Image 1: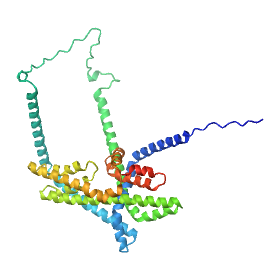
Image 2 (image 1 turned 120 degrees about the vertical axis):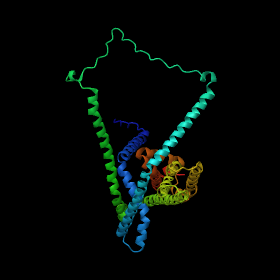
Image 3 (image 1 turned 180 degrees about the vertical axis):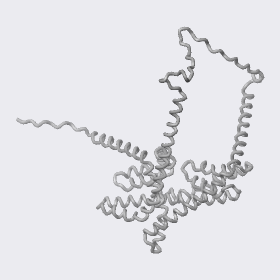
Image 4 (image 1 turned 135 degrees about the vertical axis):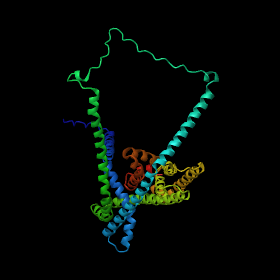
Length: 396
């Protein structure tokens, strides 16, 4: 009689463990790809952000019956012209600031010397307070130099230097090694630095072309992408694209308009106290105020540095500090939630972790792009079935 062989018992946790292992490997590969390909990803994201900023102008030209292609070209040309004029203004202000560098140096020396004098006075006061008077009057006897101990028996005496002409042919002095090593190290560092700068400049040169193609061919590419899908994936992709576009556009445009408002307010404030280079310091302070968590100290740095060569009283420094702080608090607590925060919907813990993660991967530019990238990920999770729980986890 034939008896069938029982099947081996299956472990129910095997598929789950397999999914966890694959997910972990995929996450590690994604992190490595984001880190080593950061120049490419940052360039593409910045191009999309600029395209979102310029999209309303393209739609405005299209309303007056200008085709999308010429309208995109015209808007990109106006954008590059504004960048050129802005850069020319910054260059002129920077030239004037370079001429005033000696005044800044003298003022910084005075501040440093004054701070050192105050610190020395504080140290003396602390010494007189903590140390009894009977020990303060005692003079300190300088220590006598200690002669080196004689060489012990059985040890080899140090080698006497050999004249350069009598050195063996196979010996090389330390100076010669340094002469051969230092230029090599310096050239390697210079080569690495120039390579990184070249990569960045090469990617920046692609930004105008990417912006133009995104503006002129964005609708066509979207239609072609949706044409390749059928049924539920088409509707899901439509919802995801619309949600991501709305969130990123609201965040970018809202921050840009908020930065312009802060720049105008800062320029009027700095011009009222006759701050040097207020046309440059105002926009710099206004847009630095938008940096998450570090906005207030960064916004205070430009006006406080610009006022260094002026012989001002502490009242003006206090006025500038309080005014910039009030502008920052008003923008972050009243304007930002109304124009930007209502579309992002990220909880503070996720925002903090996102800033840490993207800042570690991409440096300073990662701090600026962290929130829109995380908000886009949340938008994808909210509109894809099976990922709604992750969207709720990221949301507020």
